[in-house]
Image (tube, rainbow, N blue to C red; front, top):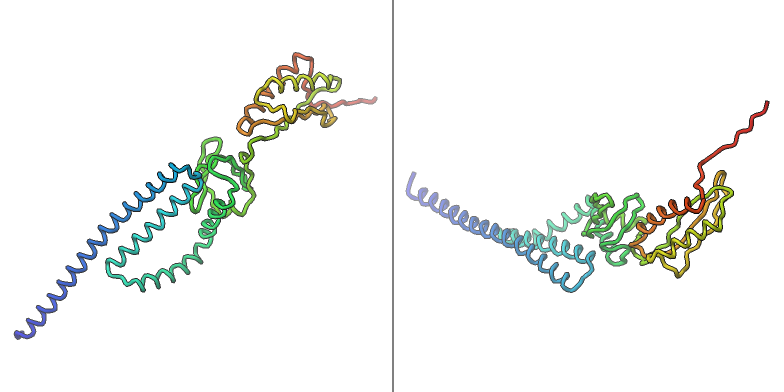
Length: 276
């Protein structure tokens, strides 16, 4: 091997070594940027959340914006890391365009959930803290509204994640949107019992309960003459948060007071006539 070939191989090795060193520096810088960028993105999202909390931003909007900002910042960090390594911005844009089309077709349901989250925040069919029931039969208190899902806690302390797309397009019953609710209770007395006495007992119980609104006044009326009982319907208004407690308390009081006034709760019965 002559001197010229040795010099040529040495020159190639030197070029390879220089390129490796430069790429290694870029790669090390990219790793540092990735770690620092993700940490900074987390800090910014946390700081934004604290600012919104201090300014009494609605909790549902707070969780949505916090998660959205966090995702956008992480995407920016990844783009900066790629450009630091040496990937051309035009190449990144082209790849992102093709990826967006492919992802958009593959994740149409996810994009629908994102749009559903925006719709929920704009039109506010419910907010964090509301007790809702969906058309699928799920019910509970809304804990958080994220970009793609809504977190709900059931009355038996289960956590359910519901897709925002189905929530935005489905039927939702919001039990807490109004401050007052009408309660309908049904009781039965035996045939022959005094309806006037039953009405007076129930109205007296409702008048003594400070949680029951007296305007509009509670009403008690005979609903149906059933096969083996007289059906009584009671209607009154309470604050939404008091509904369940008032209804349970009234049921117990009616059960005890009816006995004291000679009013009987009938059992299903059938008359049988025998002929010889």
